[in-house]
Length: 294
Image 1: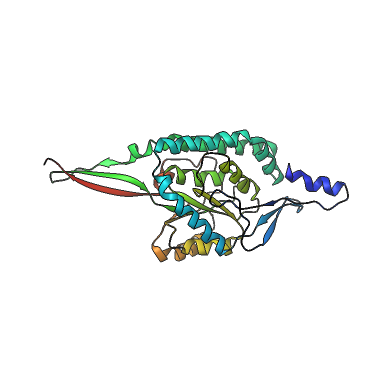
Image 2 (image 1 turned 45 degrees about the vertical axis):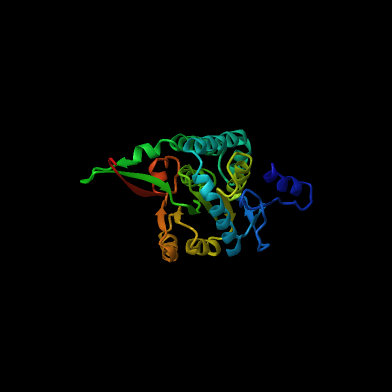
């Protein structure tokens, strides 16, 4: 595993060659246009990898990719989106050992790492099961006083900007999965101190059936990426997974440029955060009138 190489190199008396993790945008793995990087560190301060430090331009490129993919993704059948979420779960399950190693390199115990990977797999399966059911549960036929049928249905909001939680795998999966289950596309900002599981999750997505651009993952510093994402006029909603109220407040101020919906999920423990309401929070209600008779 790449996180074991620095220690082995140090033991051999040579400088380690650290892996530089790229970002995941539009189904590809580009480098940050800024050319900058930060170091991912083990709990004892040992560098274990290089991580791209993305810029405002990277945010714009990711939003462009998400917008290009959104109509096609929302146009797929709900059943097919469920199949694809299930496939992501399969691929993550198959690489569980790798993700457990990444989590333990970040300070988790073996048991904690195994539990988090399994919970992330189960979370994907949970939302895979809801893709073709939430519409039936939350849509309605409305009573009206005229000779019309009146229907309210849910539609994807569009491009969702996600400030990913500090939880390096389960939190990321728990914030992205309900968004894409409902037909949205996402741009996720990974800014925590342990980004390796999140950026490696991009490899899982790339080897599954998710179309390019449905999920985009950027790494870097929150103060450089969040403001341009929140202010971007082609982002339809924000999902802020930070327990810091000042972060949410500053993003909400930027979001007024195009009246984005802002959902705040300040959970620090993502173990039990799963619900169909996580899907409907990122949906719009569309009402249709249809006359009865000729």
